[in-house]
Structures are given as structure tokens and as C-alpha cells.
Image 1 (spheres, one colour):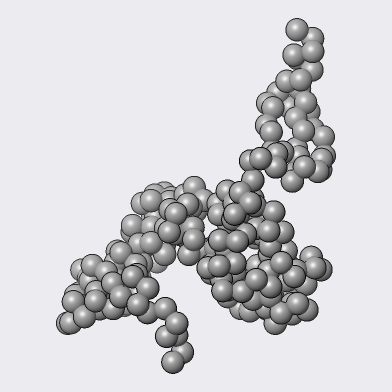
Image 2 (cartoon, rainbow, N blue to C red):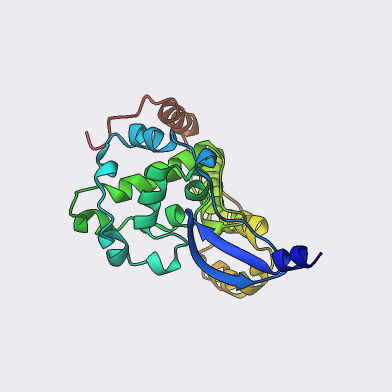
Length: 223
């Protein structure tokens, strides 16, 4: 019984097989991951989707994390995302906030001494997360992206009021009350419409989206 109580009071916080610190707690929470729980194919899938294998040339210098303007808001730094991707920590990478917080400023890509396209890596991981429907719970950015795409598909264009209404209802409904004052000001200044409008030629837009989703638009960017 005494041993059980001792075990209950100890929580080892292990990340990647390395003990970071020891704390006392009544809850045992295992964060250590064994090698058989990793996905060895994950890195190869990402490299194939990314179209470049220089991901394996990362020397973990940390320049990407040091130059990233939003790294202090991320749960894993860009350097750790690369290391975890190569090691097969698929679930942690796909559910991380980092890939959704990337500001696409390309600071990491410009500063990388190994010329790794880190911003494209973030896009690839984000696209893979969308395809596999893996999102961090109640995190607003993926919800915003999904509802934006749904609004454009339904009406042919975005509608800010409907977009924000859907996002707050699915992430933080109480936030609607705090935003009501701003919404009223925008409405009376004519910057926020109540009803969405449908564009002309909506079917043509749907045909374009359908072609992109089926891969017919790949490789034509910038041409």
C-alpha cells in the first residue's frame, strides 16, 4: 500500500525518452514514448509530400526557432518540430499548435544554413492535418480555416459576420458577448452585412476548387 501511495505521488515528466524534471503529484501521467509507439513512416510521408528530403540534413542549430517571431507562442519550436518529424512523433506533431501559428514570414527559411524550406514544411504538416482531420482541441485557427473554406464554397466569397459567428460558436461562445460592441460599430458604419451574398458564376468557382482537390492544379503555381 505504501509503495502504491509513493507511486501515486510521483509523476515523471518524460519527453522523448529524456527526463526533464521530477514533480510530486497525485496523478501519474506518462509522457514518455517508447520506440514501438512512434511512426517510422511519418518522416518519409512528409518528405514525399514536401517534395524535398533536405529535412534530414537539419543540424538542429536552432536558427529557425531564434528567428521565428511567434515561437514564444508555440508549444514546440520549429527546431523541435523538425526533430520530432524525423523521429516519428506523428501524433504530437499533427496535434501541435505550432503548425497553425506559423506566420509564413519565411524568417526561418531565409536564416537556415542548410537551406531547409521550413515554411513549406509547416504548410505540408498543416495540409496533412487537414486531410487526416486532426486538429488541436477547440483551437480557433483550424476552425477559422475550415469555416472560411465552407463559407466560400457556399456563397462564392467570404462573409465576415457569418465566419466569426461560426468560429466563436465552435471554439468559445462566450467570446461573442465581448465582441458584440465591436460588431455593432462595424454594422452601423456599413462595414458588416447581416446577410451573405452569392457571387455570379459560382459553379465555375466550384469547378476550380474541385480540380484543385483532385490534384489537377498541382504544379501550376506561379506559372
